[in-house]
Image: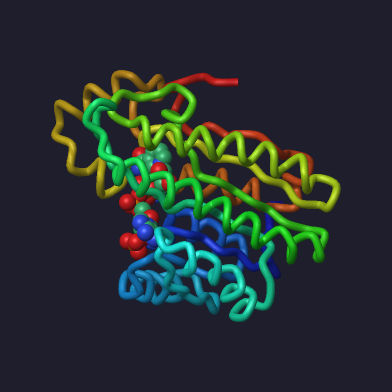
Length: 250
Ligand code: NAP
C-alpha cells in the first residue's frame, strides 16, 4: 500500500528541515526525486546522504524561487532529468515576520513571491505533463497559521491561506484528468528553527498542543507519502492538518 514505485517527484526546499523528511518519505516509498533548493551545495550533500541511506538515483536541481525566470525553468529541467513528473511538492517557504504597521514592502513581497507565486508557477507548468499522463499529485505545504492567523505574520499567513484557495481551484480544474491537489498543514514541527527555542519557550508551546509535544518532519513526510499515492486518488482539494490537535479545523 502507498507504493510510489515508478513515480517521479519534484520537492522544493528539499534540503530543509521538513523538505528533507518529505523527500526521505517519498524515496522510501520508491519515488525517484528531483531535489530543489537555492543552495546547490546543501542539496548535493543531502542527495548523497539520501542515496547512502535509502538508495535511489535522485537528482538535484538548483533554483532560486524568488527569481521567476528560474522558476519557469524548474519543471522543464525536471522533465529533462527525470523524464516525467508525477508528484510536485511545493514545500519551500520563508518567513519575514513583522507587525503589520512595521512590515516593509520587501518583507511582504519576498514571502508572497517565494511561498505563493512560485507554487502557482510550478503548478501551472506541471499541469500539462500531468494532464497528458492523466495522473498527477500536487501537494502544497501550508501551515496551521494560514487557517488561524498569527500576529506578526500577515505576509506568511496570506501566502499560506492563498495556497489553500489556489489548491482548491486547481483541484477542481484538473480532477477529471486523474490529478489531485491537496495541502498538508503542519503545526509546530521540530526543525533547526524550533531547536533554537529555550526550554521555557518549548514548554509553553507544548502546553498548547493536546499531544503534548511538537511534531517531527516524519509526521509531515508520512502525510505527503499518503497524498502522493494512488490510493489517495479520490482525495482532492483538502487540507491534511498535522498538528497534534493544536487546532482542530474542518
Ligand atoms: P527550513 O528548514 O527553513 O527550509 C526551508 C527550505 O526552503 C530550504 O530547503 C530552503 O532551501 C528553501 N528555500 C528558502 N528560500 C528559497 C528560495 N529563494 N529558493 C528556493 N528554495 C528556497 O523550513 P522548514 O521548517 O523545513 O519549512 C518547510 C515548509 O514547512 C515551509 O513552507 C514552512 O512554511 C512550512 N511549515 C513549517 C513549520 C515548522 O514548524 N517548521 C510549521 C508549519 C509550516 P535553500 O536553503 O537551498 O534555499
